[in-house]
Length: 140
Image 1 (cartoon, rainbow, N blue to C red):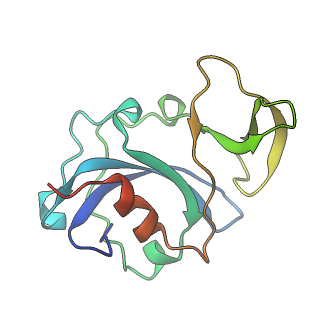
Image 2: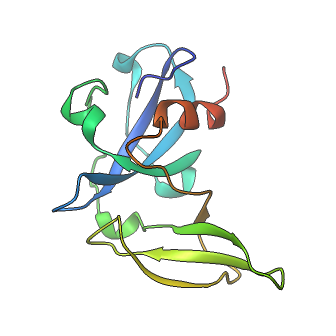
């Protein structure tokens, strides 16, 4: 993905809704000078700098180049993280559980538990993933 403040970042589309124009992608440091420097050998979901849910328009319009695949990719190893929904009136962190088949739909909301894999919020297609990802990928 090209970043708004310069450079590129490796991203892996781990989940994409079959009927909805939405995807969940993981992004990895470091910032790269060119998409030709992207490699995916050894990439694991636990290595991500950030993960976001966003629209697929930039991929469809080819604004984000597709440069390769993760070798031996297994979708089951790339979970759909929980979404941080904020804090309840009694101070507990609340998380939303996304439907794996429809990333635009929440199937549950619950109190966060120790060991939960939580990402900061949700982006939609009107937001700018390029800006959001750039804040997590520091300039090298």
